[in-house]
Length: 184
Image (cartoon, helix red, strand yellow):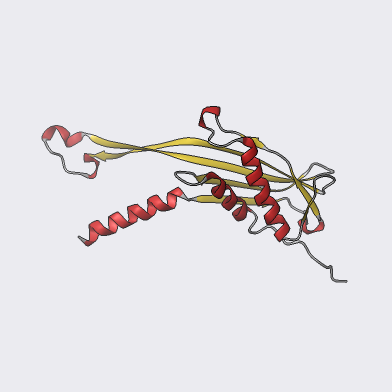
């Protein structure tokens, strides 16, 4: 009985964690000191989801991502401006259906009911809704990339806007805070 309960709990928590799983990678270009910049703006990016799979508008997506980016950067001492900013933040985001499958091999981890089933393999498949987002910060003058973040997330049953907000938060977690005063 304990073994069955353990397997059931593991399956439950694995399923729960997959519904909110996120991975985020960030990269700052070598030789770049982001704390030297003061102002930023956010431009409307690309929404790369097939038209028949979109469950939100591009404007709503932009509003969510923009609000999250502004909040995260302002918390770190940077100032949002509409024009003549030193940094330009852009993004690419999208969602897609992902099908995963496999084979459990002969007998499929269960006993055969009759001799015909002895060499039959059991296969499985699972369809999930996944998303991706890339955030890029460029120098407004030189157009050179300064920093970027790539996030992937599983969207099964998750609220899209909360998932995007969480991804932006996670992406900017290690973003440097701007120095208030420089030491002489």
